[in-house]
Length: 69
Image 1 (cartoon, one colour):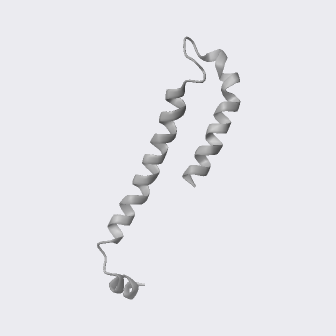
Image 2: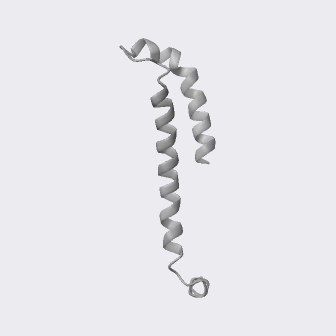
Image 3: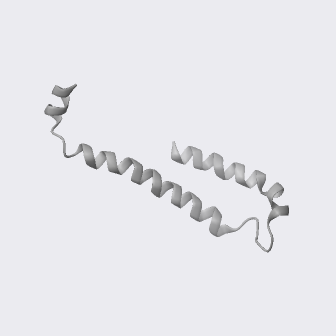
């Protein structure tokens, strides 16, 4: 889901950059650093959001978790 959203976000930002270009002063609207760093940050945050619960579940005994259900 994060990669799909990131793809749509990149396509949307490329489409809307012409409108925002008039508001940017002394900044390139197609700045490669921004277009590369924002998706990397989104991937890192989504991995951390999935990694923390995954590590937490490795501590629990599966049989005990099934009995609690």
